[in-house]
Every structure is written in structure tokens, then in C-alpha cells.
Image 1 (cartoon, rainbow, N blue to C red):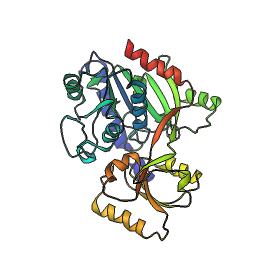
Image 2 (cartoon, rainbow, N blue to C red; image 1 turned 45 degrees about the horizontal axis):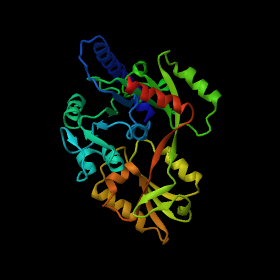
Image 3 (cartoon, one colour; image 1 turned 135 degrees about the vertical axis):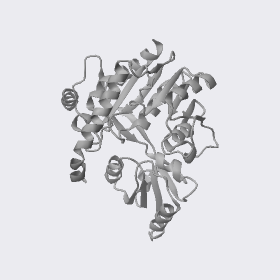
Image 4 (tube, one colour; image 1 turned 120 degrees about the vertical axis):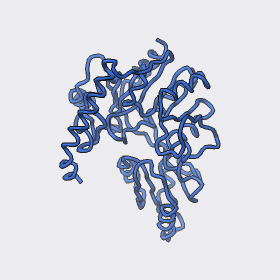
Length: 340
């Protein structure tokens, strides 16, 4: 696989040239961006996925929902519908995408969630129909037709954008130079015991400018699982699990389950996978082959949005973003921007 990617290096140079020209035209005003009067916060990354955008969006929702009327706008990746949709309780993942449905399922009484591939039109529709105080743009760092007031760029601890290269040789959607557009950079999925000296090494490596701020976060797994039954991680010891994942990078979850000495068989699918009937049969066949009476099917919260109602004995594990340092400063940055 790596050899093939190296062979595609000439195409990476062409792709880099195209994205660089595109960004230059936006920077110089040749291509127009729409700016809105209300606070718009964009969360995204330079890489193709797996940096923790969903838990970061959820963190912002928790932070803001009690004081502001919050709306979330997402593309609705891999949905089978088109155009602008405001989510309601009748929608399923195929209608709106798994991540927007996850936001709605978790916070539907406190926020509005919408999908639209055309972010400019999506923001305009939200203003017209919902009139929010603040809009969170999910996965919109490269969507420059909307000029957000505040940009949060995520990069994964063990896969920093400064160590990567542009597609198809690497996993970057645009050159690492794009990081300079960010107001805040968050190194995500860090080890929970990351030291201050290690943070300083990463700070030097990322080489942020004076106007940018750098933060470090980790993934905190919820010990209480939900789904077909409520059960804790500790109670799962002694169970035989079938782990089903359709996320960009399940490594952190695998490590967490192993740390907790859980016994599992892993069935891995691509990110945002639309589970077919044959996929469901494969999962059920693997589950039924386990002779133990204590067995469950475990999945991520995002995959649960697609699997719920199609498989029995299904539970999911939720995650949250947890800042390792300076969380109060980050909160002050966000609330200060909104108030200004």
C-alpha cells in the first residue's frame, strides 16, 4: 500500500498545486466567501478523518447550550438524501448521516441540527428557520465559501499534519500551510499522562504563529454503556464480545478494551460504512458462533446510529473530549469570541 502511495507522488504534487491556487484565490478575494453577522465556529482538520471532530463538536454543544441557542450544520456524509434538512425524531442515519443523527439523538431538546452540502445555503436556512445565536460547522475547515468567525483545527497526537503529506501520497486534504488559517489548534487523542515537556516538544514541532493557540486533549470513554441493555465496562469482564467498528481509526478503542482486559472479536468496516444485509448476516453469524451465554455485540456510538434496530444484543460505548491543560483558557476563548 505504501509503495503504491509513493508511486502516486506526481498526482500529489498536482493536487497540492490545485488546492494551493484555490486557497490563494480565496485569500485574495478572487473567489468570494460569505460572512455572517452571527458567530460561526468551524471545526475541522487537514487530514481525511479520525481526529475526533464529533466529540469536539459535542464538547462545544455542552459548553454553549445552556446560554445560547445553538445550531449544528453538517454535510451529512454518505446520506441518501439531498438538500437542506433539519433533523427530527423520524430521521434515520441513511436520511441525514450518522454523526448529525448522533448529535440530534443526544441533544435534541437543547439544539437544532441540520444537514446541507451547500454550507452557505445551510447557514442561510438556519438563520431563516431557527434564528440561532451561534452555529457550529462540522468538518468545514476546507469549505471556504463560508467564512467562519472562528476556526478550530484538530490534529491527532500520533498522526500530526506536520508529519503527513498531501493526498494521495499522504492523508492531507490540503497542504499543511492551511493550518495558518486556524485560530486554535487542538492535538487530539493524546495519552492521558502527556507531560508538559512533551507538550512543549509538540508545540515547537507544530510551529504555530503568535496569533494561534494550542491545546491538548484526550479521549475519555464512558464507563456506562447503553443500547439493548445498560451495563458498565467492569461488568463486561467475563463476556465474549463481537466488536463492530466503522470509524476512521479504531486503534484508541482497541487499546482501551485491551487495557480493561475485555475479550473481543473485531469486525472492522470503513469509516461511515453503510451496513448491508450481508454485513448484518456476517455480524450475526460471528455472534451466534460464540458458545458462551454471556455475550454481546459492542459498537461505537456513531455506528450504533446505523445498526440500531437491525441487530439485537447491541450496546455502544460513548466518548467525550477531555482537555489535558488550560481548559478554562479554551472556554474563555470560545465565549469571548461569541460575546464579541
